Image 1 (cartoon, rainbow, N blue to C red):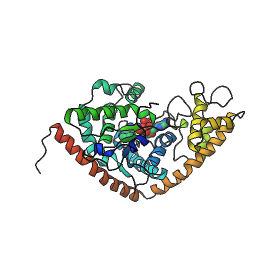
Image 2 (image 1 turned 135 degrees about the vertical axis):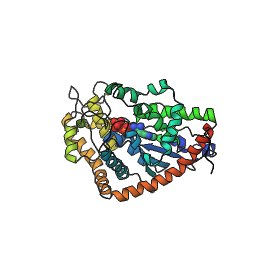
Image 3 (image 1 turned 180 degrees about the vertical axis):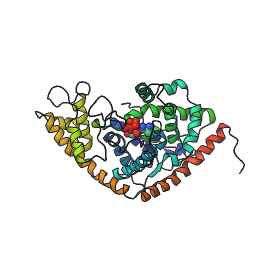
Image 4 (image 1 turned 120 degrees about the vertical axis):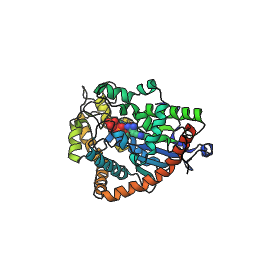
Length: 360
Ligand code: ATP
Ligand code: LTN
């Protein structure tokens, strides 16, 4: 983990007057993040790698959390599913502890400025720069160039637009998003250099634990909504018996000893990481507690610990989904607030880019 990037504590200690002159500048330290509604439920990696952190951070920061539905269509989505998944994501954010009274919660496609800024940032990005993004390289290698949409290639510029429109100081995301954050910073600096200071250059906030949760069946690949099989996933909306079954059949390593070794024992190390994250214990404490015990013991206890942590969230999310009109109302309030920040920033970008502004 890089130590050169400022932490949330560093950002809280910085003098905001440095950026107070910028359009839509924040009066309090600000963060923004989002998670794609590309599956029927968020999974444990999304929860531990991102959501838990968002919930903590909203206490100290002015937070913007959104649902990037435009990003979701970089791979084909059934329209009916996408609508439902967007509401499910919103319900899960709230059920996990995002407070819509305190944080701004909105849907990406409600704010047209996201796609408008994307075009400008796309024109500032080099082909080579975009082609080096590992998410694009991995997904296009898996699917082949012919089957890969251009949207997947321009995905990072849409993500940069999502961020830069809100002038956040920090972007809490999982470890796998580092490269996209780096590109966002580069594009902000490039725009500022060419057209004059406009954007806050944000930093990524990466979690210490839960940074990367791996697939239970393939513990060298990250747990992902787009995994080829659901058997390696634990979803927030899974029933306890499904969670127990998935953990019981998780791939473990040769040997019987429970110790942490990411390289040689990726299966058991992943289970230890999950266990540590859901119970707020350290891996070292767990390893000593399980000395001399079998993998099976650990799995039974882990299933119990994961269920305890997820069950209240599942129940609350299902309750919220029972009243979609209320969820949509919360999202509409969030969209109004979000747009009041994003629109003036886009206006300034258009003006600085040399676009003739319509007479008012
Ligand atoms: P997809 O498979 O569609 O790319 P995903 O499951 O990887 O989806 P994203 O929507 O890309 O999820 O990620 C949402 C957030 O969750 C990001 O901050 C990301 O870093 C985090 N995240 C996703 N998967 C994991 C994981 N396995 N471990 C830790 N954090 C994760
Ligand atoms: N690419 C992100 C989702 C995302 C995002 C953002 C995160 C889209 N736009 C802006 C933070 C800020 C992912 O987690 N896969």
